[in-house]
Amino acid sequence: MATLSAVEENYLKYIFQLGETQDGLVKTNDLAYKLDHSAASVTDMLKKLSDKRLVVYKKYYGVSLTKFGLQIAIHVLRKHRLWETFLVKNLKFTWDKIHDIAEQLEHIQSDELIDKMDEYLGYPKFDPHGDPIPDKQGNISVPNVICLADAKMKKQYILSNVNDDSAAFLKYLNKIQLQLNDRIKITDKEEFDETIQLIINDKKQLTISKDAAQNMFVKGI
Amino acid sequence: MATLSAVEENYLKYIFQLGETQDGLVKTNDLAYKLDHSAASVTDMLKKLSDKRLVVYKKYYGVSLTKFGLQIAIHVLRKHRLWETFLVKNLKFTWDKIHDIAEQLEHIQSDELIDKMDEYLGYPKFDPHGDPIPDKQGNISVPNVICLADAKMKKQYILSNVNDDSAAFLKYLNKIQLQLNDRIKITDKEEFDETIQLIINDKKQLTISKDAAQNMFVKGI
DNA sequence: TAATATTTTTAGATTAGCTTAAAATTTATA
DNA sequence: TATAAATTTTAAGCTAATCTAAAAATATTA
Image 1 (cartoon, rainbow over the protein chains, first blue to last red):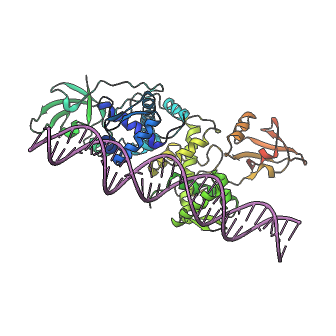
Image 2 (cartoon, each protein chain N blue to C red):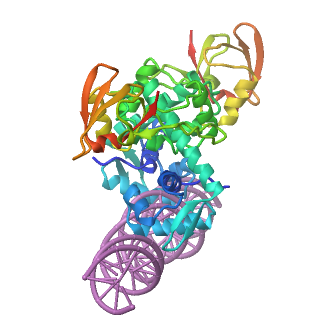
Image 3 (cartoon, helix red, strand yellow):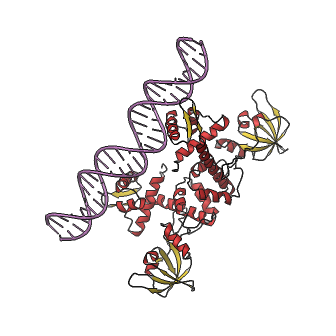
């Protein structure tokens, strides 16, 4: 099969990511918002991807990936996350600056390159935001995490995954010095606005908003 | 200034490279051949680049880079050669497989990325083909080399630079086990077809064609 | 359930980067 | 130096990927 354009790859990647929360079905407007394009553009492209048997698209209903489209989406995700890992681990970028660069690097076409990079990095399982890196066969280890906003009081958790979409959020985490793998205990939850009181690593006390908590994912210890 | 497209960057890069042999002036057809596009496409693009003050273009006469266009061309070359260095030194690619990948990587837009990569690699001065890597300020150390086809008999030379345009040529060098920094002495030069007899590192004897010699550059010891 | 609001698609246009064919210009040659 | 050959440009057109505005379909609500 001919190689896809960077634009097509992006569509597949976002259909995959948006589909994860729902049952795989993605709405035109959600994609348009994510891609920052008009809904009309998205409709156009969905027809093209459908012609290429990369997605199943039903007018006015929604779109989902075919087996083949899914394969490609996962491969793009693999590339994205391996590059992010390289940028942080080797080039010493901070995690809030890597997203835009990885968005470009993920479209470099060379399987040999990405496999050598995987080896060079020591076959990492998670990227700097705690997201799982698909292996060469496309297997993704789904980590057993829950959203911090839904976590229970008094229990001990590990911060294992953050939403990497917003550099502002990641900068905020830098500022409050909260890092992946920190231990977290919820000491109080305000009913009124769902603000959460935390203790980090049995030391530091922290107050975070509902919005912030919704961008963090933790694992019970 | 707005960032240029990968296509525009490529035009500037090739205008620079073709201009090196001549006095900076490049003909439409030479560019068309190099880029593997029609001459008409090239004319179109030259007009656009001229409007953006990146080149000086005179109809039917030729094109050359402005100071600004030159800066960008050198920056693209810097990126290309740093990436090639990374691919060989860190990822263990052979030098005949890196060109096409570097052609893609050179268009990634991030100054911070390329500066960090430069540092990561230890500020290399030459890429795997012996070509000089421009520094951040755009300075290129012009190595004092001559073409092996023009080298003198009996003198000792060092192979310091090869033409990287053709993977086939680089593969040929791999096959005959000739590497950068090998010592070379010309023992005979056939007048009829300019075939050259060499001795490599005072050991191996080798016969190479005129075509091959024209793709190698050496430095006197 | 009829009217209204929202979402999605269609229609028509635009831009970047390419093409071929024909016209214009420059260069080479008889 | 007139003509032929080669080079370069112009003209017209194509595709991918976007847009806006209008139309159609679906969802919400009074």
